[in-house]
Image (cartoon, rainbow, N blue to C red; front, top):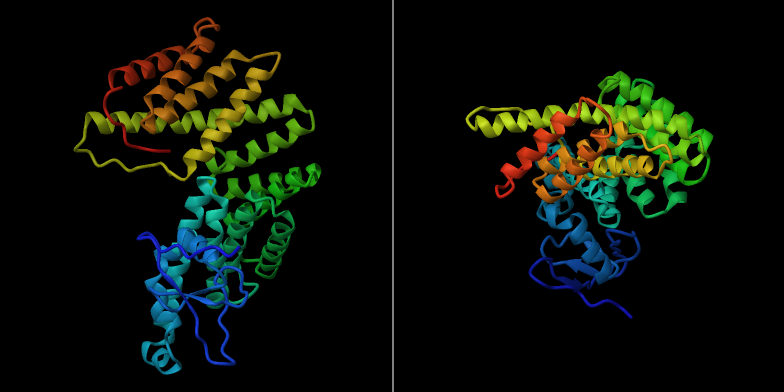
Length: 368
Protein backbone atom coordinates (compact mmCIF):
# COMPACT_ATOMS: atom_id res chain seq x y z
CA UNK A 1 0.00 0.00 0.00
CA UNK A 2 1.39 3.42 -0.91
CA UNK A 3 2.39 5.58 2.07
CA UNK A 4 0.44 8.75 2.64
CA UNK A 5 2.33 12.03 2.39
CA UNK A 6 3.48 13.35 5.73
CA UNK A 7 2.40 16.98 5.90
CA UNK A 8 2.91 17.97 9.52
CA UNK A 9 4.64 21.18 10.48
CA UNK A 10 7.99 19.42 10.72
CA UNK A 11 8.30 18.60 7.04
CA UNK A 12 7.57 20.07 3.65
CA UNK A 13 4.43 19.22 1.73
CA UNK A 14 4.61 17.15 -1.42
CA UNK A 15 2.42 17.40 -4.48
CA UNK A 16 1.90 15.16 -7.53
CA UNK A 17 3.94 16.18 -10.54
CA UNK A 18 2.35 17.24 -13.79
CA UNK A 19 5.28 17.13 -16.18
CA UNK A 20 5.24 17.70 -19.94
CA UNK A 21 5.92 14.66 -22.09
CA UNK A 22 9.59 13.89 -22.44
CA UNK A 23 10.42 15.59 -19.14
CA UNK A 24 11.59 13.24 -16.41
CA UNK A 25 12.49 13.93 -12.80
CA UNK A 26 14.32 11.45 -10.60
CA UNK A 27 13.79 10.56 -6.95
CA UNK A 28 16.31 12.24 -4.66
CA UNK A 29 17.03 8.99 -2.82
CA UNK A 30 16.74 6.12 -5.29
CA UNK A 31 17.02 7.87 -8.68
CA UNK A 32 13.86 6.15 -9.93
CA UNK A 33 11.21 8.11 -11.83
CA UNK A 34 9.65 10.70 -9.51
CA UNK A 35 6.03 11.71 -9.26
CA UNK A 36 6.10 13.89 -6.12
CA UNK A 37 7.64 17.31 -5.58
CA UNK A 38 8.75 19.23 -2.48
CA UNK A 39 6.53 22.32 -2.31
CA UNK A 40 9.05 24.38 -0.32
CA UNK A 41 12.00 24.34 -2.72
CA UNK A 42 10.17 22.93 -5.80
CA UNK A 43 13.47 21.60 -7.12
CA UNK A 44 13.54 18.26 -5.29
CA UNK A 45 11.54 15.20 -6.31
CA UNK A 46 10.59 11.79 -4.92
CA UNK A 47 9.15 8.49 -6.09
CA UNK A 48 6.90 8.22 -3.02
CA UNK A 49 6.07 9.86 0.31
CA UNK A 50 8.25 7.43 2.25
CA UNK A 51 11.39 8.59 0.47
CA UNK A 52 10.36 12.22 0.87
CA UNK A 53 10.00 11.76 4.62
CA UNK A 54 13.30 9.87 4.90
CA UNK A 55 15.12 12.61 2.98
CA UNK A 56 13.52 15.35 5.08
CA UNK A 57 14.60 13.72 8.34
CA UNK A 58 18.02 12.80 6.95
CA UNK A 59 19.13 16.09 5.34
CA UNK A 60 16.57 17.94 3.22
CA UNK A 61 15.21 20.03 6.10
CA UNK A 62 18.70 21.52 6.50
CA UNK A 63 19.39 22.26 2.83
CA UNK A 64 15.93 22.72 1.27
CA UNK A 65 16.29 26.43 0.44
CA UNK A 66 20.02 26.16 -0.28
CA UNK A 67 19.18 23.95 -3.25
CA UNK A 68 16.99 26.55 -4.96
CA UNK A 69 19.71 28.84 -6.42
CA UNK A 70 21.68 25.80 -7.60
CA UNK A 71 18.98 23.67 -9.16
CA UNK A 72 16.69 26.41 -10.40
CA UNK A 73 19.46 28.29 -12.19
CA UNK A 74 19.26 28.51 -15.96
CA UNK A 75 22.36 28.61 -18.11
CA UNK A 76 22.03 32.41 -18.32
CA UNK A 77 21.73 32.88 -14.58
CA UNK A 78 24.69 30.56 -14.06
CA UNK A 79 26.75 32.82 -16.31
CA UNK A 80 25.64 35.87 -14.36
CA UNK A 81 26.26 34.31 -10.95
CA UNK A 82 29.58 32.93 -12.05
CA UNK A 83 30.88 29.41 -12.00
CA UNK A 84 33.08 30.04 -8.94
CA UNK A 85 30.17 31.33 -6.85
CA UNK A 86 28.10 28.29 -7.72
CA UNK A 87 30.95 25.95 -6.80
CA UNK A 88 31.24 27.71 -3.43
CA UNK A 89 27.52 27.13 -2.79
CA UNK A 90 27.98 23.46 -3.60
CA UNK A 91 31.04 23.27 -1.35
CA UNK A 92 28.87 24.66 1.47
CA UNK A 93 26.31 21.93 0.81
CA UNK A 94 29.03 19.26 0.90
CA UNK A 95 30.23 20.45 4.31
CA UNK A 96 26.71 20.60 5.77
CA UNK A 97 25.93 17.10 4.50
CA UNK A 98 29.22 15.74 5.81
CA UNK A 99 28.63 17.16 9.29
CA UNK A 100 25.02 15.97 9.43
CA UNK A 101 25.91 12.46 8.23
CA UNK A 102 28.83 12.20 10.64
CA UNK A 103 26.68 13.38 13.55
CA UNK A 104 23.97 10.81 12.81
CA UNK A 105 26.55 8.04 12.39
CA UNK A 106 28.11 8.91 15.76
CA UNK A 107 24.65 8.42 17.29
CA UNK A 108 24.23 5.07 15.55
CA UNK A 109 21.48 6.39 13.23
CA UNK A 110 22.77 4.73 10.07
CA UNK A 111 19.47 4.83 8.17
CA UNK A 112 19.01 8.54 8.85
CA UNK A 113 22.61 9.20 7.81
CA UNK A 114 22.09 7.72 4.33
CA UNK A 115 20.41 10.74 2.61
CA UNK A 116 23.11 13.15 3.78
CA UNK A 117 25.91 10.75 2.84
CA UNK A 118 24.39 10.08 -0.60
CA UNK A 119 23.94 13.77 -1.34
CA UNK A 120 27.47 14.51 -0.13
CA UNK A 121 28.83 11.93 -2.60
CA UNK A 122 26.77 13.27 -5.53
CA UNK A 123 27.76 16.85 -4.77
CA UNK A 124 31.46 15.91 -4.46
CA UNK A 125 31.28 14.16 -7.82
CA UNK A 126 29.75 17.29 -9.36
CA UNK A 127 32.33 19.65 -7.85
CA UNK A 128 35.52 17.57 -7.94
CA UNK A 129 34.91 14.92 -10.60
CA UNK A 130 35.42 11.13 -10.40
CA UNK A 131 38.57 9.45 -9.04
CA UNK A 132 39.76 12.61 -7.26
CA UNK A 133 41.14 12.48 -3.74
CA UNK A 134 38.30 14.77 -2.57
CA UNK A 135 35.88 11.92 -3.33
CA UNK A 136 37.44 9.57 -0.78
CA UNK A 137 35.86 11.02 2.42
CA UNK A 138 32.44 10.94 0.73
CA UNK A 139 32.89 7.28 -0.28
CA UNK A 140 33.97 6.41 3.28
CA UNK A 141 31.03 8.25 4.81
CA UNK A 142 28.50 6.41 2.65
CA UNK A 143 30.34 3.14 3.26
CA UNK A 144 30.11 3.64 7.03
CA UNK A 145 26.35 4.26 6.82
CA UNK A 146 25.84 1.10 4.78
CA UNK A 147 28.17 -0.88 7.05
CA UNK A 148 25.86 -0.14 9.95
CA UNK A 149 22.91 -1.38 7.89
CA UNK A 150 24.69 -4.59 6.89
CA UNK A 151 24.87 -3.74 3.17
CA UNK A 152 28.33 -5.27 2.89
CA UNK A 153 28.33 -5.77 -0.90
CA UNK A 154 27.67 -2.06 -1.39
CA UNK A 155 30.30 -1.22 1.22
CA UNK A 156 32.87 -3.28 -0.71
CA UNK A 157 31.98 -1.43 -3.92
CA UNK A 158 32.27 2.00 -2.29
CA UNK A 159 35.61 1.17 -0.66
CA UNK A 160 36.89 -0.16 -3.97
CA UNK A 161 36.10 3.23 -5.52
CA UNK A 162 37.87 4.95 -2.62
CA UNK A 163 40.95 2.73 -3.04
CA UNK A 164 41.08 3.52 -6.75
CA UNK A 165 40.93 7.26 -6.05
CA UNK A 166 43.79 6.94 -3.54
CA UNK A 167 45.89 4.92 -5.99
CA UNK A 168 45.39 7.59 -8.66
CA UNK A 169 46.37 10.35 -6.23
CA UNK A 170 49.61 9.34 -4.48
CA UNK A 171 49.86 12.82 -2.93
CA UNK A 172 46.87 12.24 -0.62
CA UNK A 173 47.71 12.61 3.06
CA UNK A 174 48.09 10.24 5.98
CA UNK A 175 44.60 11.05 7.32
CA UNK A 176 42.93 9.77 4.14
CA UNK A 177 45.00 6.56 4.18
CA UNK A 178 44.18 6.02 7.88
CA UNK A 179 40.42 6.36 7.33
CA UNK A 180 40.48 4.12 4.25
CA UNK A 181 42.38 1.32 5.98
CA UNK A 182 40.14 1.55 9.05
CA UNK A 183 37.05 1.18 6.87
CA UNK A 184 38.62 -1.74 4.97
CA UNK A 185 39.55 -3.38 8.27
CA UNK A 186 35.99 -3.10 9.51
CA UNK A 187 34.66 -4.58 6.27
CA UNK A 188 37.01 -7.56 6.41
CA UNK A 189 36.19 -8.10 10.09
CA UNK A 190 32.48 -8.17 9.22
CA UNK A 191 33.05 -10.66 6.39
CA UNK A 192 35.31 -12.90 8.48
CA UNK A 193 38.59 -12.17 6.66
CA UNK A 194 40.38 -11.61 9.95
CA UNK A 195 44.01 -11.75 8.77
CA UNK A 196 43.28 -9.17 6.05
CA UNK A 197 41.45 -7.08 8.66
CA UNK A 198 44.55 -7.13 10.91
CA UNK A 199 46.75 -6.01 8.03
CA UNK A 200 44.46 -3.07 7.31
CA UNK A 201 44.26 -2.08 10.98
CA UNK A 202 48.07 -2.19 11.19
CA UNK A 203 48.20 0.24 8.24
CA UNK A 204 45.47 2.32 9.87
CA UNK A 205 47.56 2.64 13.06
CA UNK A 206 50.69 3.56 11.09
CA UNK A 207 49.02 6.35 9.09
CA UNK A 208 47.03 7.63 12.09
CA UNK A 209 50.19 7.83 14.20
CA UNK A 210 51.96 9.73 11.40
CA UNK A 211 49.07 12.22 11.25
CA UNK A 212 47.97 12.53 14.89
CA UNK A 213 50.75 10.97 16.99
CA UNK A 214 51.23 7.53 18.49
CA UNK A 215 49.46 8.43 21.76
CA UNK A 216 46.42 10.11 20.20
CA UNK A 217 42.85 8.93 20.80
CA UNK A 218 42.44 8.63 17.02
CA UNK A 219 45.34 6.18 16.74
CA UNK A 220 44.19 4.10 19.70
CA UNK A 221 40.91 3.46 17.87
CA UNK A 222 42.93 1.25 15.51
CA UNK A 223 44.40 -0.64 18.49
CA UNK A 224 40.88 -1.26 19.80
CA UNK A 225 39.65 -2.64 16.47
CA UNK A 226 42.75 -4.81 16.17
CA UNK A 227 42.19 -6.13 19.71
CA UNK A 228 38.63 -7.05 18.75
CA UNK A 229 39.96 -9.17 15.87
CA UNK A 230 42.51 -10.93 18.11
CA UNK A 231 39.70 -11.66 20.60
CA UNK A 232 37.66 -13.23 17.78
CA UNK A 233 40.71 -15.39 16.97
CA UNK A 234 40.94 -16.49 20.61
CA UNK A 235 44.30 -14.73 21.11
CA UNK A 236 43.31 -13.23 24.45
CA UNK A 237 46.76 -12.16 25.79
CA UNK A 238 47.33 -10.01 22.68
CA UNK A 239 43.79 -8.60 22.85
CA UNK A 240 44.26 -7.79 26.55
CA UNK A 241 47.55 -6.01 25.88
CA UNK A 242 46.01 -3.85 23.15
CA UNK A 243 42.94 -3.06 25.26
CA UNK A 244 45.29 -1.93 28.04
CA UNK A 245 47.01 0.43 25.59
CA UNK A 246 43.64 1.91 24.59
CA UNK A 247 42.54 2.28 28.21
CA UNK A 248 45.71 4.12 29.22
CA UNK A 249 45.44 6.50 26.26
CA UNK A 250 41.83 7.37 27.05
CA UNK A 251 42.52 7.63 30.78
CA UNK A 252 45.23 10.21 30.11
CA UNK A 253 42.94 12.16 27.77
CA UNK A 254 39.90 12.06 30.07
CA UNK A 255 41.95 13.02 33.12
CA UNK A 256 43.11 16.15 31.31
CA UNK A 257 39.53 16.96 30.30
CA UNK A 258 38.39 16.53 33.91
CA UNK A 259 41.11 18.89 35.14
CA UNK A 260 40.09 21.47 32.53
CA UNK A 261 36.43 21.09 33.53
CA UNK A 262 37.20 21.63 37.23
CA UNK A 263 39.30 24.69 36.42
CA UNK A 264 36.47 26.04 34.32
CA UNK A 265 33.98 25.57 37.17
CA UNK A 266 36.32 27.20 39.67
CA UNK A 267 37.28 30.04 37.31
CA UNK A 268 34.24 30.73 35.08
CA UNK A 269 35.87 33.88 33.70
CA UNK A 270 38.80 31.94 32.21
CA UNK A 271 38.58 31.22 28.50
CA UNK A 272 39.61 27.58 28.29
CA UNK A 273 39.93 25.82 24.96
CA UNK A 274 37.42 22.97 24.68
CA UNK A 275 39.35 19.81 23.81
CA UNK A 276 36.47 17.44 23.30
CA UNK A 277 34.32 16.22 20.47
CA UNK A 278 30.71 15.31 21.24
CA UNK A 279 30.58 12.98 18.26
CA UNK A 280 33.16 10.80 20.04
CA UNK A 281 31.05 10.27 23.16
CA UNK A 282 28.94 7.33 21.90
CA UNK A 283 31.94 5.62 20.31
CA UNK A 284 34.14 6.05 23.39
CA UNK A 285 31.42 4.78 25.73
CA UNK A 286 30.98 1.68 23.55
CA UNK A 287 34.73 1.01 23.44
CA UNK A 288 35.19 1.37 27.18
CA UNK A 289 32.16 -0.79 28.00
CA UNK A 290 33.45 -3.50 25.63
CA UNK A 291 36.83 -3.49 27.39
CA UNK A 292 35.22 -3.53 30.85
CA UNK A 293 32.99 -6.46 29.92
CA UNK A 294 35.98 -8.30 28.41
CA UNK A 295 37.94 -7.95 31.64
CA UNK A 296 35.03 -8.81 33.94
CA UNK A 297 34.23 -11.97 31.94
CA UNK A 298 37.86 -13.11 31.97
CA UNK A 299 38.72 -15.74 34.56
CA UNK A 300 41.86 -13.81 35.55
CA UNK A 301 39.99 -10.54 36.26
CA UNK A 302 42.75 -7.93 36.26
CA UNK A 303 41.57 -5.56 39.02
CA UNK A 304 43.97 -2.82 37.90
CA UNK A 305 42.52 -2.86 34.36
CA UNK A 306 38.94 -2.91 35.69
CA UNK A 307 39.71 0.09 37.90
CA UNK A 308 41.32 1.95 35.00
CA UNK A 309 38.47 1.39 32.52
CA UNK A 310 35.70 1.99 35.06
CA UNK A 311 37.42 5.23 36.11
CA UNK A 312 37.45 6.29 32.44
CA UNK A 313 33.71 5.64 32.20
CA UNK A 314 33.06 7.51 35.44
CA UNK A 315 34.92 10.60 34.15
CA UNK A 316 33.21 10.31 30.77
CA UNK A 317 29.71 10.33 32.27
CA UNK A 318 30.58 13.03 34.81
CA UNK A 319 31.62 15.29 31.93
CA UNK A 320 28.38 14.35 30.18
CA UNK A 321 26.41 15.47 33.24
CA UNK A 322 25.05 12.03 34.19
CA UNK A 323 25.74 11.75 37.94
CA UNK A 324 24.10 8.34 38.37
CA UNK A 325 26.28 6.67 35.73
CA UNK A 326 29.35 8.51 37.01
CA UNK A 327 28.68 7.24 40.55
CA UNK A 328 27.99 3.72 39.35
CA UNK A 329 31.20 3.40 37.37
CA UNK A 330 33.14 5.35 40.01
CA UNK A 331 32.11 2.90 42.75
CA UNK A 332 33.01 -0.04 40.49
CA UNK A 333 36.44 1.53 39.89
CA UNK A 334 36.94 2.13 43.62
CA UNK A 335 36.05 -1.46 44.54
CA UNK A 336 38.55 -2.79 42.00
CA UNK A 337 41.34 -0.40 43.02
CA UNK A 338 40.93 -1.25 46.72
CA UNK A 339 41.76 -4.88 45.94
CA UNK A 340 45.31 -3.68 45.16
CA UNK A 341 47.34 -2.32 48.12
CA UNK A 342 48.37 1.34 47.66
CA UNK A 343 46.95 1.47 44.14
CA UNK A 344 47.73 4.83 42.55
CA UNK A 345 44.17 5.29 41.20
CA UNK A 346 42.37 4.93 44.55
CA UNK A 347 42.83 8.56 45.54
CA UNK A 348 41.82 10.06 42.13
CA UNK A 349 38.75 7.80 42.05
CA UNK A 350 37.73 8.90 45.57
CA UNK A 351 38.26 12.51 44.54
CA UNK A 352 35.98 12.09 41.52
CA UNK A 353 33.27 10.43 43.64
CA UNK A 354 33.39 13.32 46.11
CA UNK A 355 33.16 15.78 43.21
CA UNK A 356 30.15 14.00 41.72
CA UNK A 357 28.38 13.82 45.09
CA UNK A 358 29.05 17.47 45.91
CA UNK A 359 27.76 18.71 42.55
CA UNK A 360 25.07 16.06 42.01
CA UNK A 361 22.20 18.55 42.04
CA UNK A 362 23.88 20.96 39.60
CA UNK A 363 23.99 20.61 35.80
CA UNK A 364 27.37 19.73 34.29
CA UNK A 365 27.41 20.67 30.61
CA UNK A 366 30.25 19.22 28.62
CA UNK A 367 31.16 16.27 26.46
CA UNK A 368 34.03 14.19 25.21
